[in-house]
Length: 384
Image 1 (cartoon, rainbow, N blue to C red):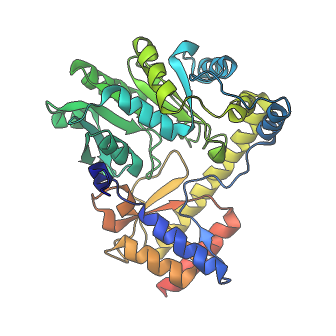
Image 2 (cartoon, helix red, strand yellow; image 1 turned 90 degrees about the vertical axis):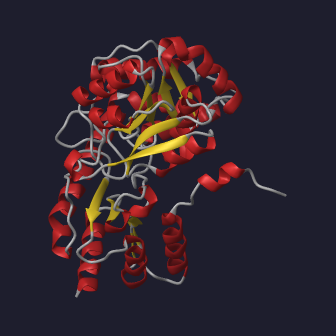
């Protein structure tokens, strides 16, 4: 039997080979420090877990509305108002089975087969693959330290073509941890608007920022699509819950798609997520944000001693995008060597695109400071 041709455009995660080998080493008794996986190492806050238990005990295990339960959408809208001073009609919010489903739903709304979507290189790899699965073409824009690894409005305007359906940006971004200012997001929205295109903003790491405010593009434009998630800030990765905010005129087609693509988000997870916005939950995630900032600062000081260069100080997420060209010309081979010889697992730049991918790797500071210090010590020993 023949596979669909779209599969040819979907590349595997190179880091999965790293992870598989790491698991083999662990099975053989090796101690591996995991700095490769983009997942918080904190457990889900107890308030959320308790709300989930309560929902299960109360029998909240049946289908919900495809758009998500009204109390959760109202809670999300209230959070925008309280945290950002932005008032969003809850009807514009669709709760989704993880942000990945939200991304697929959002792209399905405005990308036709044969159209292209502008996005950065490097970027989260699934962004390219989602576009390809829809029959579109990811039009990647090489970005580097000069623009903090982010595209600019001018770059979008210059790259726009007759087949361009819109642009996709992320703030804070993966793998680089950099953010976009509201003024830049406003300029990007203007570029897309003037060309009858859509701006899709990935805000999955919103709230995990350091030295800059946690902002939303919805503060400067309401004719855009914003994606968010309970996975990162609220440490609910395995609960699979995210949300999408769409323009008011697009609610009906978005709901129609949601009904057909995934029927509804997980019911217990939705009821659990109601506790995400409780004061005690927000206090805990703020404490954890401060811990992440201390980890970032530790690595920013330690990594140059390895010959690694972090060209842009990340102000969000929990990643450092390090230039290792002083020690290797092939970051994938280097990551494999590092794993075998030191037991430190890292993600090579080739997972995030092609632009200068061999000189970069991503460090996820999703381990406590003692483990980070141990990782640095092992890497230093490798350097000799």
